[in-house]
Length: 307
Image (cartoon, rainbow, N blue to C red; front, top):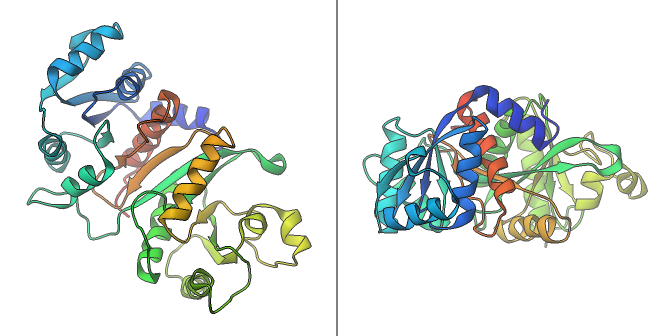
């Protein structure tokens, strides 16, 4: 089982390098990340953007221009479409967001005759190192970047995608906590009603090799002490491997709180497409982007990117 980012990097390096198409690498962070990923044996970078700007950044960072394949494309939409077409035809194993918006990149991935659709829901899964209560593990959370207000059908897809990522990380039977603001079903709180329905649906084997339960408040999903104090009885209580947030707002706020209050690095990946799509924030440091690339390599090499 992969328990930290160092081990993630080592495992990904053993499976690399994979071809990573970087869409609009027009800022230092994405260029540094793909350069380090290539140096670590994770990736072979394909840089798609304004060539004069890309080459200028490479010179500023003292990176040889011939280290990467560079495709000149000034327009963001056309750059995204080129990267998607490359991935659809097998010329790229992973897409990495540079200074393009997530919406533009995902829009390109889903439209046109050469798209990356698989028939599955696309969702964002992010992972972080978890050392609470003596743990040394990776915890996963979803969805913080794609599905704004998912219903039951979408939440099943989100759980499936997160479980596939957990399996790729070596978590054989992940415990999945469906989160809300409270741990008891309240008809006026839709996320608690959804959680009860999802737990029941999954109890019939809808998603193999996982344990799904809810609703949970965050504390009794991740803390055995909190679960015991509140008398929350469940095999998931206090030991969740995967946290399913009620909507994008909750997922986005939770993720940013981990970064800015908790000092965590997050590795993000969008799964459900033909290839992993990496959507690290433009404000993320190169270390977080490198971890995202490693996660993408792991998923690409395991064939679990299309759930």
